[in-house]
Each structure stands twice: as structure tokens, then as C-alpha cells.
View (cartoon, rainbow, N blue to C red):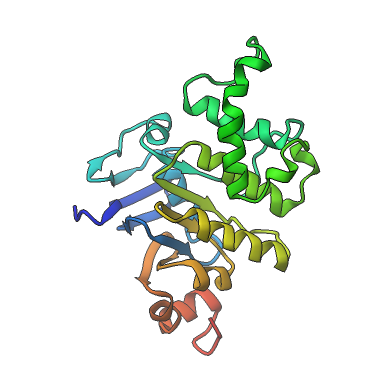
Length: 253
């Protein structure tokens, strides 16, 4: 595998009782890039994410991380290898403070988990690291608020902070701007650009403005197969993409 590729799949397939959700997907993700998976609903984007992070087992095919075959690795093993994902629905502990949410992720990273029997004082050694991560996502000023008090956009920012707490080399973001208003979309877009420096990001995203602004390379899926891959200019001018993704060759991408 080329040294500039951090992730590669070969012939990746997933079937559910005869229904083929992903078929023969060959994906190549360059190191330190932002790579998007796009396509209409039902194209297989989230299924691909679930295969890459081993929430699902492939029916066939291979997955390589840094040239190492991780096809049979466990989900926990994938995370330990530095592949960390977010989900479409914001996943935070609503009644813990913003700082405590990040601290839980740091405890998990260092193998301590949520050890409720330990005194809060013994866990304060994570506070400085948690605050540094919160500063990266512009949440330091609200670190003592419960996560439930945050706006939706800020909850997604908190989720990115907890993802960063795992020190990922590869971040998989599943629709990070879904359900946001324009102002939150702009804020999270800039946040992703900032935290992607020195890392690799693969994202599923429906907002094409976000994709065109952020992404170095785009893979378009249709009915579980790769339709085309390339830069935004290459993909957006492809008539097959406009037909499959936008409903017609005359549609604006």
C-alpha cells in the first residue's frame, strides 16, 4: 500500500439476508486529508462507516489501516489503533458537565473507564487535558454547564472534543452538521477544518456546501457501490452523479 494512504478497502461487501447494502467498495483515503462519502439516502454510506469501525462484520472484502489488515479486528481493537467515530445523533452524557464528558473519554483512553468508586479528586488530573481540548472547540467558557444545556451545534462540538480525547489518527464523522441552522453549520465546518490539521477525517455529509468547502476528495455511492471518486469539481460535473444524486442531468450540484 502506498505510504500516503492511511485507509484502504478492497472488494468490501455487506449483505443482510440477501439484501446487498454494500458491494465491491474499493476506497482509498490519503493521510492528512478530509475525505467525504456522499450519495442519496440508502446509498450505503453509514453501512460503510459501520464496516470500517467493525460495528458490522464484512460479508467479504478487506480493510487495511496503515497497510495492516484489520478486517478481522474487533471494534475495540480498531479504536485502540486510532480510528474513532462520531454518530448521526449527538452522543453526550446529558447530565454530566461539559468538562466531565471529555474527562470520561480521557479516562477511557488511559484504560481507567468510569470508575465511580474513585474520589473526584483523583480524577482531577484529567482536567487540564480536558480544558485544553475544550479550548480547541471553543467550549472552555461553558465547561461547568451540563451538556444538556448546550445548543445542538455546541453538543456536536462537544462530541468532537470527546472524539479528540481518544487521540485519533483517523476520525470518522457521520453527518456532523445534520439538523443544524446556518450559523451552527458554519461554526462546526470551521471547527472540523481546525481539528483536521495533522489528522485524517472521513465524513458522511449531506450538506454539499460543507463538502465543497472542506473536502479534498469525494467518493459518491449509489445503491451500495462506488459511482465515482475525485475532487469536488470532478464529481460535481459528472453527469452520472447529477443523475443519481440530484435526480437529473440538468440539476445543480
